Length: 122
Length: 110
Image 1: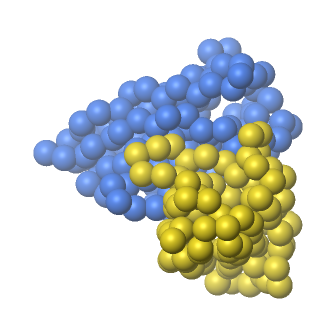
Image 2: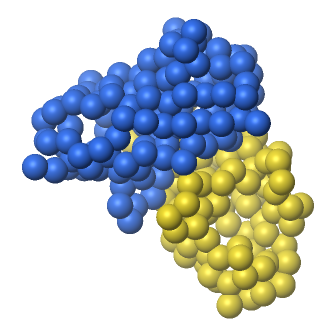
């Protein structure tokens, strides 16, 4: 069974940094692209960033580009999202997702973690 | 800026059929955008309904179906049930490694 478990959320002050992690199990981690999706309070889903299976390719939404870095450690079956220069509008539940198709590139998220809350406030 | 469009809200009667759509402000949607559909109820993580346009995710009943209708992706629910009342989101690949969600459709069953 595919399982995704996010960690690292919490309350952080504006301008500070935070690193989220996502541990995957039940599948060959390195075979799949992984994606971060977030949802602000009362808002819709927002695609944030994707990383290919081997970590060589990364892409970001304009809203986080330059402030955010996605990475993965396939030896630990874990993906990360480093969030820098945090703003109030980054407050959201952050979801880790896995693609449906193996092969490294992204073809669409199918499996979801339960999400982790990040609150940016002084 | 690429915008993915969805109806903000829709209503369907119990037992009825409803089609929700997902479009692009920059042009037509085809299978090349790998349309994916999600269902979300308040306080819960999204649930994947359909991916790659029309492939049902594990455990999703066959009254949920996906297609391309005209220049949009479409999610059709036949025989709507009370517990179909949810928010529905589509996700499209817009090129250069980037994906974009639609704003979501709030479906009411009454």
